[in-house]
Image (cartoon, rainbow, N blue to C red; front, side, top):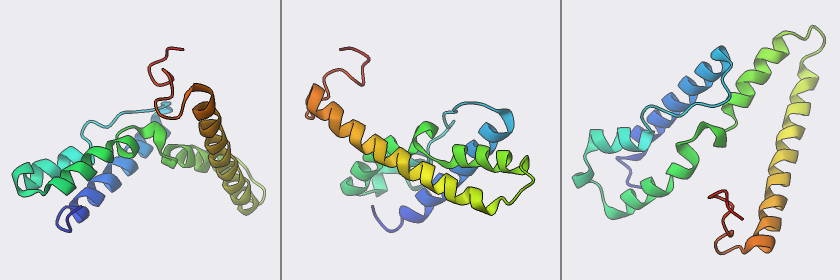
Length: 133
């Protein structure tokens, strides 16, 4: 990405993540899709004509981690802080439980992705993302 694009993009990411996390935590929703993604926000403000092709490619690739709130950990952390408020004992020890759970989740996802790559073919994963076998 170009240097002029990065601060605006990161500002959009921060606003989107914090806003969606707060909405999900306070409303009790499972997930929420952003009304405007930071990629579009930044591209509209700077103008697509003024961006280099490498920036546009990086913007297109970033939709996988930045468009869907299910791919981030912030809503889960928002819910966990609300749960921590109900516990009256030592809450600091719960931080290590949370870190362990995140580590186990990342490791399990890693192993499952490799397993599914061997079962369905890593080049295209069969039809796993289309819901077909």
